[in-house]
Image 1 (cartoon, rainbow, N blue to C red):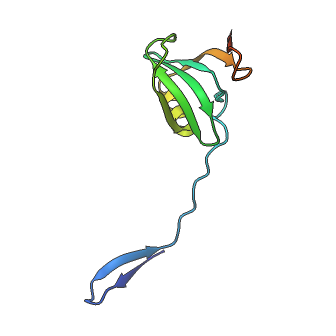
Image 2 (tube, one colour):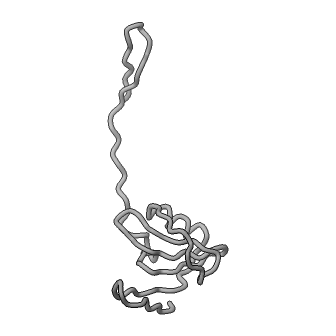
Image 3 (cartoon, rainbow, N blue to C red):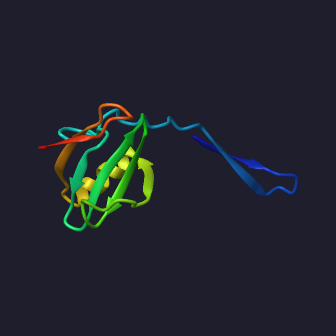
Length: 110
């Protein structure tokens, strides 16, 4: 419901409306698309490696080749990364396992 408030000079200055309900973020990426640390996704034009996964954000690297190191880490919401992967028909290339910070990572082909 919208109402108009008039100012001192009789003009409509502002509009007051009822607050909207906030949309809740989905906890997972949807059916068959769940993010985990170390995953390597392959699209037709680039590789995306998931570095960290939080409640609402994903830290990832996007590079032209899978073995590229030193690509900048980008941060985006889960929904936007999911939409990008779905739009470009990404395929999970590798599922990596990180044991601890001191040990080396161990990648298992999917």
